Image (cartoon, rainbow, N blue to C red; front, side, top):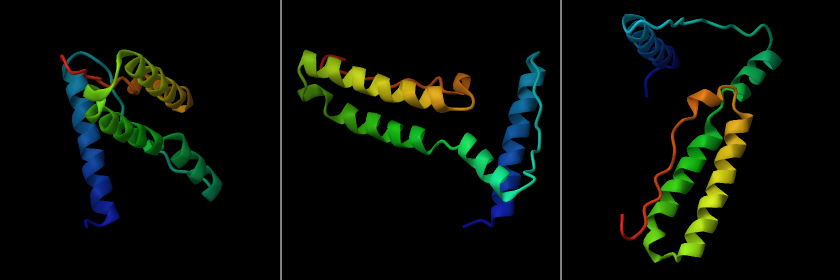
Length: 111
């Protein structure tokens, strides 16, 4: 396991590479460092940008996708509504909903 500092440097470099590419393509991007002033503020930042629920939802979508071929049309419709509600709840609670553009691809038996 790499030291935390090394992972942060790798992540920062990856973000800088994305910012550079955006700039080359005519866009604007800034890589900003934010330092919390207190432990409470640090915890608030972590919660604000936490993607745990999104990762969990992606796993649920992946698991659901495995059993789609055995579901009837009404069951598929219910599953789709349920997953959409979960996705919408996460999107509503995230700090940057524009970043959550990943959509599940539910495939039926004829897809």
